[in-house]
Length: 170
Image (cartoon, rainbow, N blue to C red; front, side, top):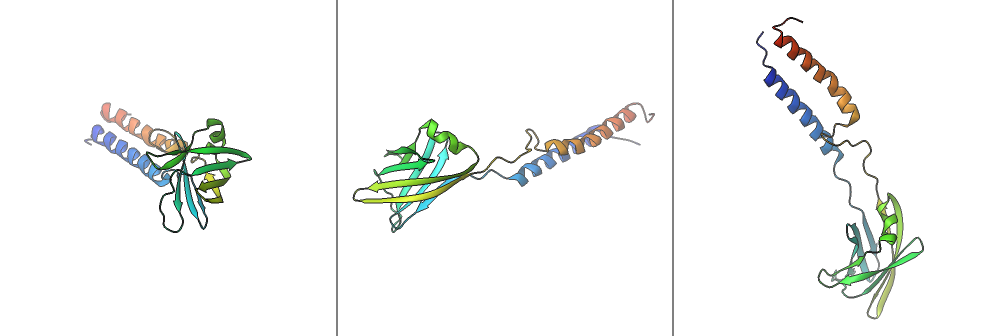
């Protein structure tokens, strides 16, 4: 029997890599937490990003951006004022102590007060943060069970290679 170990090894490695990539694709990316609040006057969308909680405010009837308004957001009895950023047209909360609980998994009810000129409104939003998928392993994404299933195959490859190197004698 003419056994080509190099070909067999590359095929086995490719199958393991493909299995790992399929496992990662099945998990999919984690959803991005978003807070959405709507009223007859305003629509507010907020996203927690690396630099803080970013909010966008639009008029409900025209979807036109509301610029240079006052936005205060309350969570668990603690309020934080958002700073309007003219260059990006959004509002930002950077208070690390206020933001810390919002980075934890769970449901976070928010109360938003918007004051734009003579108009003002109180809106509510639920901000839901989901936990990252459990059991995700670094590397190929096979997880612990996947590696335990791959181990017998790797041992079989090693035994076949050993037998082939000894000329077919065990």
